[in-house]
Image (cartoon, rainbow, N blue to C red):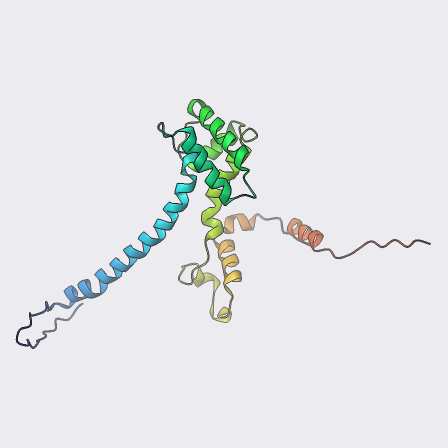
Length: 211
């Protein structure tokens, strides 16, 4: 319950009287709730602006724009290939995209990236359009590969207790992923993981002695 507090303000000559909320609930709404809501809205707008910019770089892969010319399509494919030169070859990627769009109009109907990628694999077209599949997988894994565990996240109440107050950010992120994806982590074959880790970290070297 909010208590009603009556306040008086002295008005100086030639000064307009400021608006004063007599009710505590109204004061809380204007000075606390609205301020917090405005801050939240501005933060979400700035964060989603960055996400929209990233989406615009990939959106030509699943959008069906009839007015999109080969020149515009080639420019978008070239810009995307420049961002990921180790994964995409500029010339081959453009040829794949152009052929992909001609095939897609008749075979592929999905307009969402994850559904489109699943449909490509379901119809066995991934071997024909390997770089298109790579670009779609890059886009779909961006939220996972760029996210970090925030200190205010609810999962931290389970992971980070008072004994782990000095836990580093890197370890915290890994534990966050394990906790969120616990269904997958339970089914992991630990013996196989240990064997693979031991094989990659093996430091034994075979020595041959020549007489």
